Image 1 (tube, helix red, strand yellow):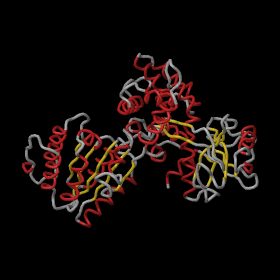
Image 2: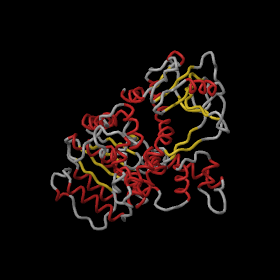
Image 3: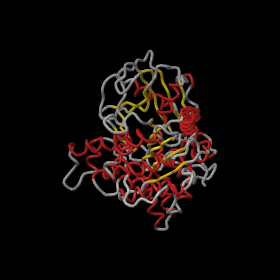
Image 4: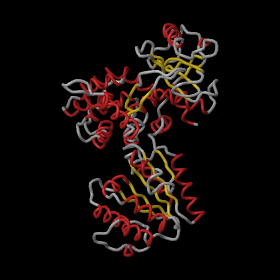
Length: 482
């Protein structure tokens, strides 16, 4: 089996739930949701392997009928170590979920065990009565037994709905949201220094399926040069599979996503690019789509200008940096690889790399500063939100604003700039940053600090005393290590 990377905190969460089962002798349910390829199944398999208790791991099949889904679950149960004797799991022709759950309850051992239902939204999609059957089985048959029930799913909206207040399973399960590996995990897994680890996280999106294929100690551009010669490489296949799973048809949603992936950030630009010969997408069509892609699918993220006054416009971006790279750069390189022209594909990556990285790293840097503020590593302990600020003309566009709340701040504690280039932050950059931050509503020249994030530090013509905080690649990585 391929090596397992990181996830110590998540394994601890699962371990504590199993300890609770053992101590109480009763059941505990936990839902685990996260985007495709984030490693939910692999995490739970690792936990089951480490736990040394009987378990059944059943994965639903998309498009299967309810009868086929129940038969598959019973087969998985029969072949697992859960029943003392496989013959205790009967052959049930045409069985439904209530019958399957009764069989499950009858073969559960008297000691702690684990039951895993993977791709749960597909089961609910196949059978509208599944949620109710699960709730009834849990209440009447399973919750009184020493079982840890793990419910996994990639459809984030459906998994959230499973335990919503108006749904049958409300109040019966804890919820764990599994995100990508963090930059510190990637740094440890690949043996990279901070600058290269940040690049690796941006390229991989922190997705384990890509990180596992990454040679130890290899910088990002060298890795991409190597992968450009392999049309079946994970760096191409993982985002392509996620795209096809979420958006199998070339519909309007797919066009909107691709417009954002190509670099359109504003509502107006997205509408123009995703439109047709008849013109831009109407607001009545685009606005609900953007809400669905951000709130339900969570494939897009939206940023609002952060200052002491409400501001516009909101800016959209692809939430997963690997999918963002694929839509913006790697899809074209992948096509070249398929045609046997890896050199042409990599030249395309090289040409776009610096500009793409400079924009893609901004959310990571903002998040790292937020984490540092929470752990009181900054001179502004009351910072709870870090964003950027811009006006309608994007003149200026400020990379960093730290405030007490978002998107309308009560107080701005710092503002600043990001320069993620091989050259240091020089006096011209400093002068431009000072002019820009002074225009932020709520900026106070007497009390608002200056924070500079730079890949290459300060230039030789900048006195370090002229900035309050210099945020380096090492600071970015260390913010996740705590």
